[in-house]
Amino acid sequence: MDNIKQLLGQIDESILQDVLKSFKPWSSKKQVLINKGSFADKLFFINRGFAILKFSVDSKEWVRHIAQSGEFITSVESFVNNVISEETIFAIGDFNIYYIHRDDLNTLRNKYQEIDKIYTSFITKALIDCQHRIMDLLCLNAEEYYEKLLKEKNTIMVSIPQYELASYLGIKPQSLSRIRSLSRSVS
Image 1 (cartoon, rainbow, N blue to C red):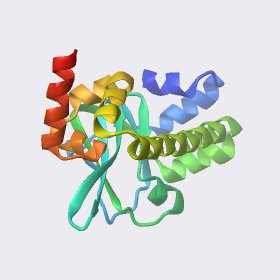
Image 2 (image 1 turned 60 degrees about the vertical axis):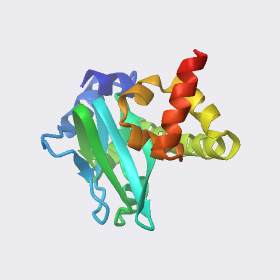
Image 3 (image 1 turned 45 degrees about the vertical axis):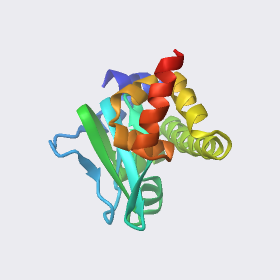
C-alpha cells in the first residue's frame, strides 16, 4: 500500500485512509484480471510485477500496453463507458496487485475533489502514453524503438517474455532476437 500512498501524493490523511480502505488485494491466484467480453469494473494497481493488456484482430493477438510496479491498468473504454471489454489483461511473474471497484472510485471522486483530480491525471497520462506510443510506432524503426524502450523502460524489457515483448514492439519474435543480438554486439 505504500506505493499507492506515494502515488496519491500529499493529500489529507483522512482522505488517504478513506481511499486505502477502498482498495482490495487481488487475492485470486489466477493471472487473468479482465477477460475480453466481460465488463472492466475494476481499476488495478500493480504493487509488484507486471500486467499485460492484449487485444486480438483476425485471430492475431497484440500487446497494447504493459504496466509495471507503481502503475494503474484497466480496459479504459470498458471502465469509463461501462461497455464490454475488447481487451484481456493478465498479470505475469510474481505479482502483488490491488484493485478498486468503479463504483467505489466514483463515490470517492464525488466526495473528494482531490481524488477526482488524481483520476483525471490518470486518464490524461494514459492518453499521453498512447499518443507517444503511436508516434514511436509510426516514426521509429524496430531497432530504434527497441533501444528507446531499453533506456526508458529497462525493467519491462528484461522481464517480459520475448513473445509478448515482440508483440508490444509490433514485430515477430525472430526479429526481436535479431535486434537483441545486434544490440548486444554493439554494446
